[in-house]
Image 1: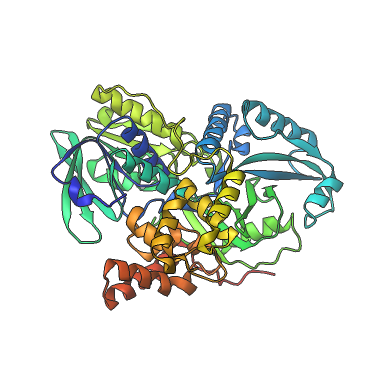
Image 2: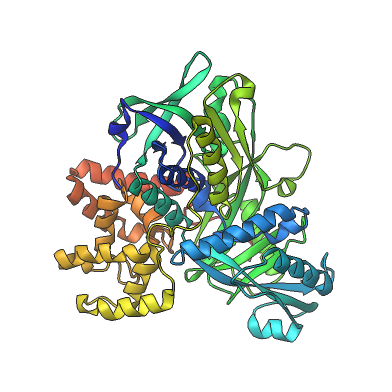
Length: 540
């Protein structure tokens, strides 16, 4: 996948997608597979926004049963099964425990009833159904749980995408394989409009500073919480209700994912095993400030800590860093943020007197593929183009694996000649799927690229070079945060930032000033997006 922004000028595309999150890249893949001439631009990097700041779950949404949104739950369950099948290296099953205490809104019987309905809505799933647990069984499974008042609970299964950033990148890679042209670090300055028809966008290349026009028959605004900002100059109505959610990254303190109900406001939230850490979240509050300057506030952090300690009283506030993001929800006033429906809307602006533009609102990580299918169906219909959606059957880029454990074992035997540890081979496969062999081809040509980037981590130097050559990496931030797990580990990659930046600079022929700027940009990125270590005083 090469960055093709300059090549987009002078062409006319069937479809221009603005926004390189999971929805935008999902649309690009579907459209390219159907033969539509497709372009996509993203102002930062693929997965920069809401995609990379989620709870990293591929799930039906247990709490949506409370809202009686059975249709959304069923749709999400079906999509969960699709992703487990087409991206087995990126999506896996995850066991959840729901403890129930005296005084909780729902007792054990009601929890079992809800999970029975959840099982029914997941009919045809490859994951096991739920089972009830006594208080004693719960404490054996999770010894850190508060025993006082514990009545029992249940165990059930859902899905997890440890790196939704990779899901996003692999959709982009697949789209490019089928002819789509994509560019990150390309900001839309304004839409191109003539006679009340949107015919594309004026785009600024953030790497060169040059601007160019990209023409298309149809344009899709898939920028998530930025939708209204981009649409504003056209005089279009506000569509999005923005809500902020934060997560805490802490040393691992549970064996399973834990479903918790906040006593303060009744919200459902989680403690999720993630890498060697625990991910706690999320909050849900209205947000109207700068979308590019997000951070977790003391009161939000304290809320999650206090509510988690009700379940795990010995939890220490050892916060490694925080994550803050903003959801794009359907604009609905007069209800609490957590009660806003999590479905999606596809708005064609011809009703606003503007032809050629579609805006997207809402949606979930789990159901991105279905939303993309609906959008491409609509655009293909407008263009009079036939073509069946194939994203349900075709494995995602690198996803053609039927038995992941067996595949990993065979690969570890086959590539032991390169001197890599078994856990390094497994890490490569869980990152790249079948494409891990392309990374190791670089090692075979240049053995020095087989060296680890950090003694405590499995990533190797070849992954940086592969990112530059095949995955449109343009900076250290691109690689550390969206192509690997290095920037998401404790310390967030700051200890090996200089090494990664040096390797990128050597390949891109940077001068000393460019390398220094790259590292400064990465540090600023952590500070601006709430990904910095949390140093506020918290009550112990």
